[in-house]
Amino acid sequence: LVLGEDRGGEAPAPRDGFRPLFVFMTLTMELFAMASPIAKEIHERTVVAVLVTPATVGDVLAAKGLAGALSGFVQAVVLLAAINSLSAHPTLLVALVALGAVMVAGTAMLAGSGGRDFISTLFWGMLFMVPLLIPALAALFPGTAAAWVRALPSYPLVRGLVDVQNHGAGWADTWPELGMLAAWCVALFAVGWLVL
Picture 1 (cartoon, rainbow, N blue to C red):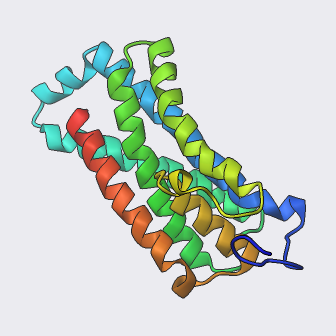
Picture 2: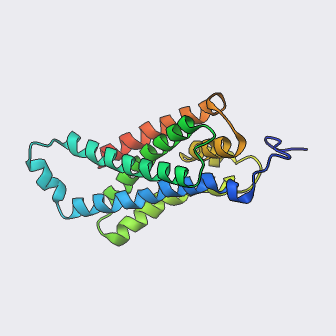
Picture 3: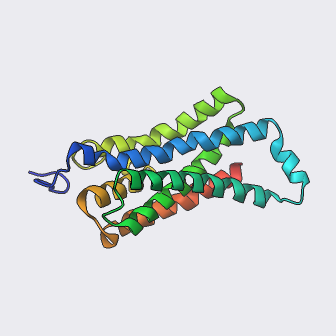
């Protein structure tokens, strides 16, 4: 009796099995890298000073979101290239990483909005990061993930990265993950903008 997909004989080498998780961890670390400056700028009133200039609130929010997403995206793509993981489906991997970077940027705006100093920003960052890490930990063990794990925002990203890099999945195989991830990106980015 096989639970989930039968991948008998298709198990990747442990070294290859961790490659998608390295990329995912790079994206989630961007959560802290973006949340800390946001909290600092709010606490030190830098944002208020910027809003005295012709820049609007929308300009500041767009700059924060795009800078955070672009930073995470570039780091993840450089890592993909460095560990020689762009060979399978490069455009699909880049699309997954881009959506993951947007999701993390929205989450970082939420964490940065709640923080006032280093410790509170660290607390809020961990509060958001721990649930995002659960699907990555579930990917380490064979079998089907529980329904509550599949409901977490990072599940489609982890699933897509693992399927493409370790099992050769293509665009047709990952459309459900891409759609779910895009929906989470829109929701988290919109909530991050509203809260910030």
